[in-house]
Amino acid sequence: MTKLLVIRFSAMGDVALSAPVIHTIIDAYPNLEITFLSRAFFKPLFNQNGNFKFKSADLNGEHKGLAGLRKLYRELKKEEFDAVLDLHEVLRTKVIRSFFKLSGTPVYTINKGRKEKQELIKGKIPFKELEHTQQRFLNVFAKAGYSTNLKKDAFLKISINETVSDLISSFKLKENQKIIGIAPFAAHESKELGIDKIKSIIETLTAKENHFVVLFGGGEKEQLELEKIVNEFDCCKSIVGLLKFKEELMLMTALDCMIAMDSGNMHLASLVGTKVVSIWGPTHPFLGFSPYQNKGNMVQVPIDDLPCRPCSVYGKIKTNEDIKCAEQSMEKISVEMIMSKIKINKNE
Image 1: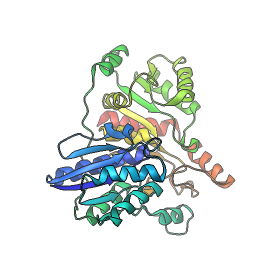
Image 2: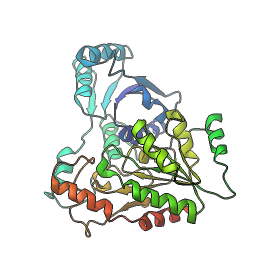
Image 3: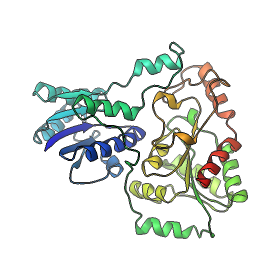
Image 4: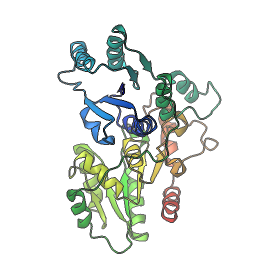
């Protein structure tokens, strides 16, 4: 049995994108054992089987700083890994992989294409679809001698527990009523559609389409914002603060569709096999972050109609010109554009 250590600490979306890759590799190579090193919070994103292990890194506690990373390395070194794969390429992972390299363990590192992405958004190279992040992950495995294509059904397999089942029952769904999830927020405000349009979508879904809407978010600020929205509509429920992370994933499997920004929730819902209508403004799927098995459901303003897009790789806006572009990229997305994608989902 060959043992690989695979490292990816964050972010939520990138770790979610890595899960189908890990599932694919394990299925393709039965004699391969993978230990995935990440934050404990992300463990529910992976199918647990005999060839997969999850190792938690406490980067804010015992594994903090150089001394903490050295301690983490000593813990990992005992496993006698045959190779280390760095899917993150940040300072912490560079430190860990350097320890392994000095001890003679082969190390393979992701090429994130940072320069190419920046050149694309600045118009220095022709606009084209760059290599997807999941393919970049697969390329690291190929360097280590494990080459394969990404499976189309490498989803997270997760069953609904009693807590989630009871929550769904509390919705008191009418006959044939669909459950539509909406995740209005993103790590960067520039990638958010805006509360007014979210309300218009909810009104259309609940009043005209007879759907039940479930709102996803996190943190006190978002919780308060969503509670205000819920008070304005029937057949609408915010689940912020009601479920554990793993249970939110369970609930996502029960959705008929998730509407999400270019965000972690977009990737989480895609990971569990739910159809996702994703909304793209200042960012663009050509930069390599389109949702797994949901490319056909993306909503965005065509580049020909708004040549300033994309103006950011991840949503961080740096100039007044980019702020204007980001605002226009969201303003030009209509409720009708989004609803048309949901109707496609309904008829499939």
